[in-house]
Image (cartoon, rainbow, N blue to C red; front, top):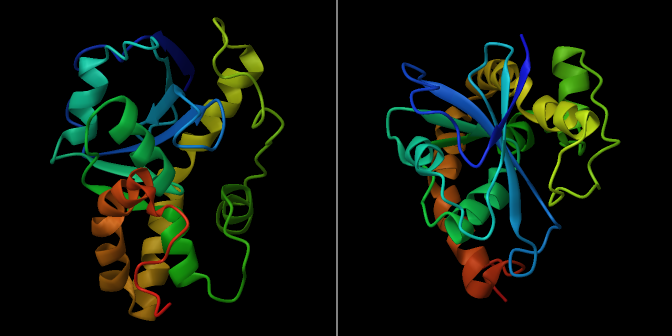
Length: 205
């Protein structure tokens, strides 16, 4: 059980045989148009986290890109809409298939409006995440141990959350609705990149 730092890309075959991986990213900010993708972290749900400091601006990471588009590997996110859009823009790949714990939480945990990763982990897994490094320089040439630990924590618990939330979705009869939302996520990300980030195209006005 450890956190592993990789420069530029994941090693070939690192996730061979995996049927699902948890993925998150770190950027220089929250603007899809302004802020570059800097770090991608991944876990196969085995307690290990692999943190990739990407080579910018080339983003030469063929192994990571292959994982993102592998149809046999489910990619689990929390608020995947943003990460998927970042991967589409900077890595030129459409990430699929995907599962989002934030969407699942909003569909299953209708008794609360607290759907952040920290809140969901605290309630469903009894894990208290630290967000101290959320706003830090992810474009730095060297990641600090604190940054590495923070990045890892964002993916280490997503498999456990998926299990708990899937059970809740099944119980409430909303699993099919959730799956339809997950399937639409790559297109929602493309709408964000195309300029409809703050617009609900399904709204009347």
